[in-house]
Amino acid sequence: MWPDEAGSNASFYGRFDTMRTTIDRAGRLVVPKRIREEAGISPGSELTIRVADGRIEIEPAPLEVRLVKRGRLTVAVPRKRVSPLTDETVGRTLDQLRRRGIAEDE
Image (cartoon, rainbow, N blue to C red; front, side):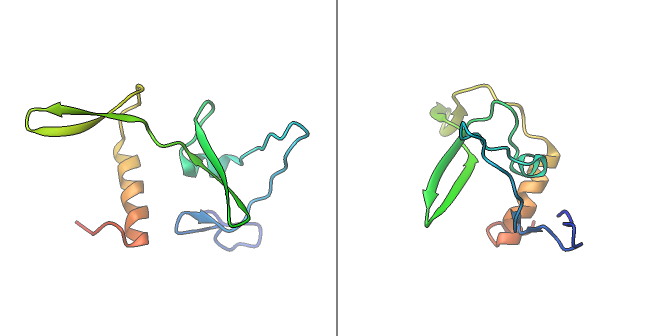
């Protein structure tokens, strides 16, 4: 969580209260660096965008996978090359899920 100018936490359960940005004449939007980092997006990342309940929602596009039979198991294999997960990424994801009550503690 990052403090804002008033010293309060700008993040609550992985969601930012507010961060201002502008849209240029061509309709391009600059996503602030801290939000890009928190969302795990970088230049070239594919995003999905939609309007829901009067809000614009932008999020990383889901990873396209294909199901492959490996022995007795069926596993999801990414259609595009992806970097391996790091311990830090897995830990951060588990922390976020635990805060939401989705993941149980080990």
